[in-house]
Amino acid sequence: MTNNLKTYLNEISQYLYTNNSKDKEDILKEIEAYILEETKNTYQKVTEDGILKVTKDFGSPREVAKRYMHELQENTIPRKRFFMMLLSIVFAIHSSIYMFLMIYNIDTLAFDNSYTANVQLLLQILSIFVVLLMDTLLLLPITAYIFKKKSNIKFFKFANDSDESSSLSDISFFRPKQKKDNIIMTVVSIVVFAVELVVYAKYNTLFVISSLKDSNVILADSVICKAVSIAIIVVTGIHFINYLFKALSGKISGEILLTTIRFILLWAAINVITFYRNEVPEFKDALEGMNYLNIVMVIVVVLFLYSCIRNCVISNIKYKLK
Image (cartoon, rainbow, N blue to C red; front, top):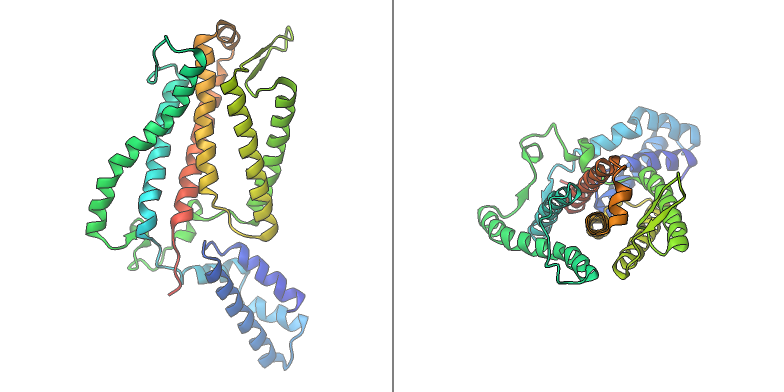
């Protein structure tokens, strides 16, 4: 393979938004075979200049990839994946609603004060699994009804075969992360990971409030807080390794399981902040002047919600070659 052809195929690969690696390989092999044959037929032998001219006539990498992506029109969600996808979306939305309520001190998960502080906090964190159970019981009959009506679940009207002008790949929300996205996320993850390690090494917890005026440091360093802090650091490290591997290998990144775990840890972190703000006078006083904290937490929840839903949908859509 010539350098020009290798570069051309690599660029096309960046715009093939299919989560089926076999289909992607088949498309690239088909393009490679066509370019080599066309070059040989036109110029009697394969040369760098000949490849360059043929690829230029064939189309830009983005245009070529788009043509092939429209051959993947049968955008469906397999039956076995539909329930888990729906459950993940509903669970993420449901959990976010509870987190919004916690952020604004609407205590929907209060427990008996006779419990110790650590037990109360642990129960509030573990209550997320009650939310998951509730969503599961709610969605089971709904998905059973849907399965009776359809053998295969089409995703939105624009995915129907009758609309040949549109494809899910045209919409950025449905595109898996590509190599450049994974490189960016690798850098972000390693920076966050490093900061978390430094903070934990110094304070033995990630839940720290530091006043710049009087150098006063207030810590939430109970056993539960330390456990949540360690879990956050470990998951951040796994994210870094995952993104680095995907960036080096050029594979797509769906990581729905990691996203869900991170979402649950966000629930735990907000529970810790809310609990200490309400129950510990030192934290309550220190947080009084930090009116922006609620806004920051809401933004973080919204971003996590978006990421969770997007990764869930992307990892479950199945593109099939016609």
